Image (cartoon, rainbow, N blue to C red; front, side):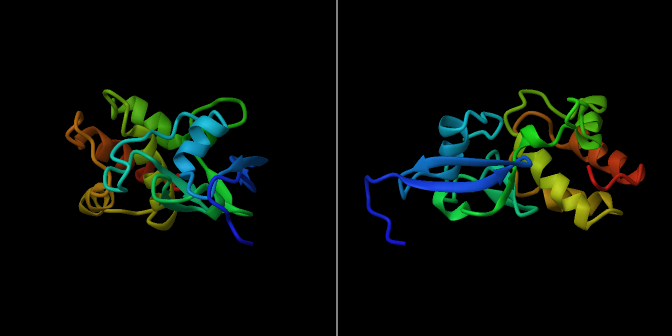
Length: 165
């Protein structure tokens, strides 16, 4: 398919378990499409260079920076945003509940990206060390917490054996 600048193209994918469809220009970033095209504002825009991690979502189960991905690139894929972490009944996921319990958020700006990163990471690393958690968090910048409470929350979830956070 040839994409023409200024022309909108249809993109279809699964978002938080539901089929979605929308129109995007070829160079529209996925983070903008999610926020402005679909109204999923939990994915935050930070640096717009893929450095801070605030825009992290999951594409086919793997963390990905939505500010470095074009909306048209996710055709046919399965996406999960922070809005998709909670249960259908609105109950917090184990990871979200641990963040709440450990006061692992302050301003909350980086929190969605950290949650999405650690949710996927814990699925692959169910028995981490504290050092491994800190290394996994190193790709997301948090300016408020100092990471101590975030690490405690992630370790709490791992100790509970609920790696499908």
